[in-house]
Length: 367
Image (spheres, rainbow, N blue to C red):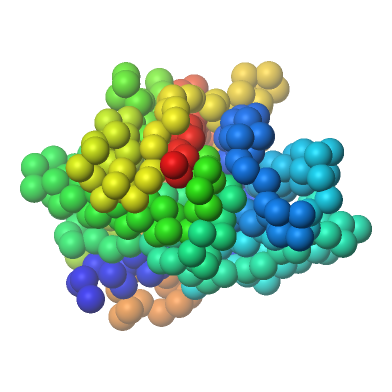
């Protein structure tokens, strides 16, 4: 096992449905992908008269952000046939599958498409997209959004930053190498699962043609600010050097070329397995909290709404980096102090803060 596999295992989204409540921008990203999914679905061969549609939502978290997408898919199929529909929600073993079940079955504030749909069947899988999820040649359309940037493992920390966007030299190369291996693995597993003519619609964080990435679309660079604040804690003696280095987020943002290569290189295993890149384009989806601030102008309101969306995906990693010699209460106090500092910074100087989403929207087919 990699010495950094344990840190990768700290990846969890906010539980109890809080992830989807906090990440309004993630839903905006998926809403933007819905027409792409429906266009891809229209080209997928229909199952036989007695067969079922099979879909997968990979890296689904609590499922709340993609409810409207799958509602649109179900409605589209209902308009053209009567085949039963199976949707497999997949995520890693530490995911909050209890929240997922409650959201899908209509036991929360979310408006689920499932209640009353007797011919739609949802299943949950704790096999991540780094692993096989479905039987061979059973998947008609696979979907994933804002998930495949997480690495399956890390082989080093970043010595002077908490994210690969601030890494250089051999450290950055190590992250790029692992990301390429993970992307290769993801594609090969999906190539085996897809039916002939099946599709993947994958919406992944990226570094776009202008160098933009999540939280760096103009104004304050979010990851640099994360790093600056942890360095302040280090300089104050609040955390140790080892803890600071362990704050490294196990993520990598591919560019368009890195995403495309295995799908266009005729010598790659993914290409030989039948996968082809139909289309890829980068898009920036604005931070909804920063956009709302431009309308209401209340800095305190903005800060209070913005920080939970940050915490929803990185708190578990940061907390997991703290030494086991600390008590649970001490860890909680330190984490609260960190996010309180960030909230104070946004409240006092709100201009330029925000988490604009930078994604590559791609459609892949199996020939």
